[in-house]
Length: 481
Image 1: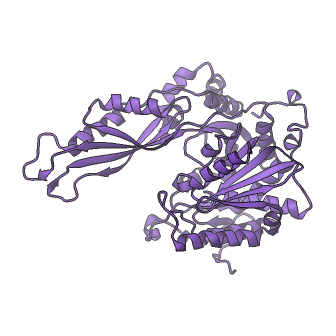
Image 2: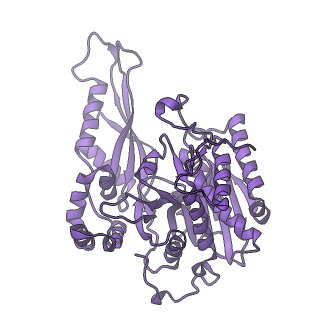
Image 3: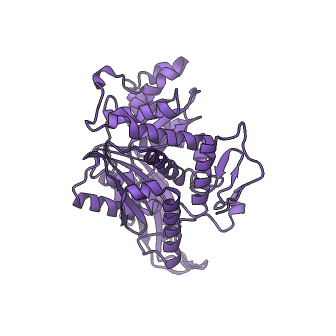
């Protein structure tokens, strides 16, 4: 398979032969446009063939992994694999998803510098849709396993791999995998899926990278707001039309944000990063637990990301009214995408919105929803320590902190059967890269891919994940800052 490359290769320094190999494998995966169908419908023949092509590529690229693993196809295109270990007790599950979000036909108008599905390797980077979300993580996970297995390694405990086929479309493949695991009585002791990253430019005043690991994730609710009207000709409009009533309701939603609170996970994140800061910021964040109220009120003023950390959010995403310019709407609808804060519920979210709207003519219906995920253990828990150790092995000097993931992932489905679910992709991302996820010019640094492989190798071979679950005395170990 011939790779498409740009003429310029390498930026500050040429990547190692190993890093270049990983980049080429990711480039090949990016060139297969695995866009899952919208909604619950079955895949078309062409869509199925596209995912089958990726599966064939993975088999060809990682023969040791596929030879050693038992394989189940789950859902529309998901792969669930079991790598047998010395014991089946307290298994480890590693997750990544194969599907990517679509790209407009006129991708150049969107601002792409390279064709999104060409997998161009240029300037020390791999460019294209999925390099960060989530084929980059999928590839480095499989690279680490392939290297270890080829070297004669075998895991101390069972390792399960779940590669969802439709995470971007609500994760039906992951749901099917969870159902199958539940039938078999499998309860993963630790799960690691996509989520945070080794982030730079993520915190004011912090010069070094910060590994943010999702210890929970917000819930999600897609809500439909509907107002019925009489319709008729636009030449004789009523005093209050269906779209007008709906518009006032939407303005009320934005004018009445959800209450703020600072969750324990956010407190731990702030207090963990505080020692790396200087001046007033260090003093304030170091006392985050005692300053919950003031911090929760101030953070929303610092921008949408900080606001989303301390409250449930409701975004107006879709609107629909009359089918013609001279016809009154008999029905006006809006869609709200709500991200529910940990500690709240779907019911509480709807109650707040109905109270804010205060108009019985506006009907609120749930299209789909899931509650916020349980909070996974941090501190001296061996699973948390194992992640911190793997970060230090691959990104030395990086501070590791927990956070509440604001987006949704397949991990939320697996949390139903697992006591500790973490969300972290071991790839370096600056602010520009994070903003490119689901947008134009998505890319990953080749050097970061190699470090991602090192992360998974360190995680899989670390003593904390040995047969006993903890081969060292945690009481003598310091919590990851």
